[in-house]
Image (cartoon, rainbow, N blue to C red; front, side):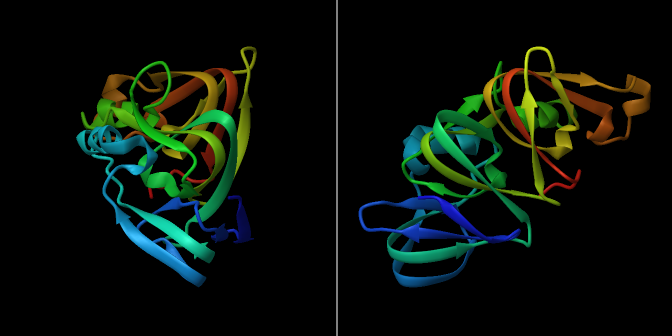
Length: 216
């Protein structure tokens, strides 16, 4: 079910019988019709192992299942919202960036590796925490949150993209991640991530970048 953008910080989704969607708890702003909201304890479409993976990673963002017949408006914390439509491909996104998404999408977690785990890599380097990222795969729409809006940057083999990890929101496609320090170790002592790290994304795909280095 596609989202309709009401403004830069609110979206509306149509809920129909027999179909469900998931949203971050507390993201419902208003609704019309016969709609129910149920705390989700099974990790979305990914099932129990998906939930366990997120808990191990410290990324067990609480979700609620949305069902019924009507329209629901979503927003959270005044953050800007960006809608991403998937057509059988996979989106790699941090759990706390998710506002709402179609229940038709298969949800899972991926251990930090050739794809995914972008902020996990940063957390692992800086704090030793977090090695997982959330994946959403299939046909449907995803509403993600960001500070200051989002821009889509294409990635190609000839034109890799370098991103400040704190500005990273999500990515899709056949993309490889490489995290490197932009400053020497002596210069990094006492700093957070910021420009101390650069994230290089190469391959074929798209990276979504927010217009701020603020965390959600």
